[in-house]
Length: 231
Ligand code: FES
Ligand code: FES
Image (cartoon, rainbow, N blue to C red; front, side):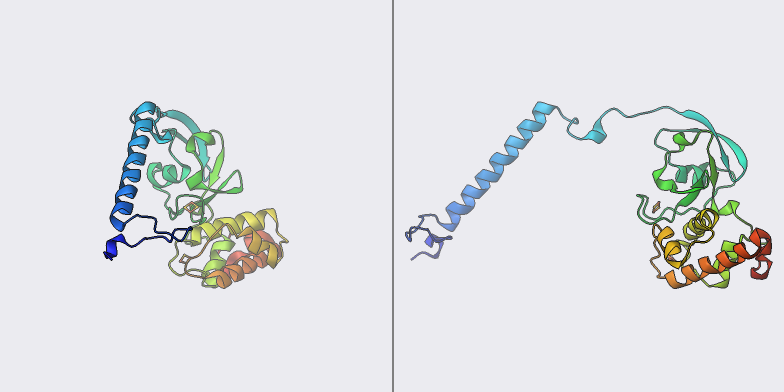
């Protein structure tokens, strides 16, 4: 028997279906072609370029707004699509590059900042929504010569490898310790769960957070001198 005439699928009746590999493939191709034609007919009915939401009308124009960044009022003009992360990194003078663009979709926390003292992903925040709001970034917490206790603790506990996640962890730790000074270890871990470290420095990060907590609770920001910071 011609091998191409052998049935591809056993016929439930036990008889040959009569289909060959060629006729099967030919029929499949015709079905796919028919389906493609049908889809393109649907697309033509809807109209070219109107089948995807992103092809619809775009919001344009600039919006003026004033916000406070690290204690300084800033007046800016932004497009509706401009994120806070983009504003900080590309529109501030000098650029505020502490908040990092890593995932750019609210997964990793590397872009964390404080908005009215609440931690937020700046990559997921539209700048246009921040009129009258107050933003704090890692640059606003301390300086190399005058570290915030959390920054000092991250140095002391070696809580950084590549460092991409570190500003976000610092900001989230500050938010945690300011809002919940008596948070226990489990709570601190919970509060930092929105930040990811691909280098796996978590034990050092948690040690730094608890070290900073002790310093801040012992004497507030002024007692950080023994860690190299004075805030
Ligand atoms: S860059 Fe914003 S959450 Fe990852
Ligand atoms: S230190 Fe590299 S991602 Fe955290």
